[in-house]
Length: 381
Image (tube, rainbow, N blue to C red):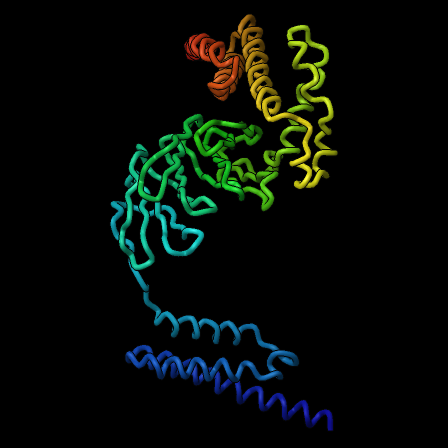
């Protein structure tokens, strides 16, 4: 009896496959003859047969399911576009919906990004890039957009096309850009082998170095405490970049010994990292502990600034040392790299810092040294 039941089931299944295939064929024919309702009915008929429990549990057929799904999609859209966004002169490189779904933004080879409503009406043209605009993204709250371009810059815009910030520290095309989940930071990836972290006013917060080649994309973790990058060197990498406790712990791990032991540190700064956990411990601290932090905001700002300033001095010192013995192109390129890092770090010092005036002076000095090293690198070719 069981054998007869199975045989009967198989026969029924074969007949239903034939019915599904027939309905799909009739649906296609009706679409071709502009009979939309009839096409819809046939695709629904095929889908209803597929909902038979026998199909779902006993002998599912993924291929026939895909065919029915494809037919439903085709009849729903009628195989045609709903709207066309026309205005770019050349390739359109990317498109993205706003968080609320009421707008779209596009970027193109004509050096512009554009904002549209979902009916295809152009609302704004974002002009400023001097070259291809590779990508465009909305901020999480939908009030801003950010673009990345082949001109070596990323830019922040409002939805009307005003440009409040330019992010311009990359040395080559900026391949991608992304907002942090809370919208307070952005991250970019570039052909210069780096990813960079910024605030929304255009201040560079961090440079992520390690890839041996172009960094093609960058993405934040859902909690905003990490970044992941992908590169042309065949690697993807994960970086600790966000979260108050983690960033503070990371910075303190870098300067803790320096604060305690260096004679150049002011006595009032020696306790900046007292009570701050190491990175390993800080990663376990819940976000709710932020409100009870014992570190005053002024000290936090001072710590970040002092760390950047000291790192810049260290890079400059190393560049000066290497200059004494540099002779080959590779050796001069190392000198150039250290001077460039020192310049970038000094540029990250905010105007509110007591080191700002000194940093500006150092930038001028370091740029002259950089040009000197670049000249000698060419001579040594």
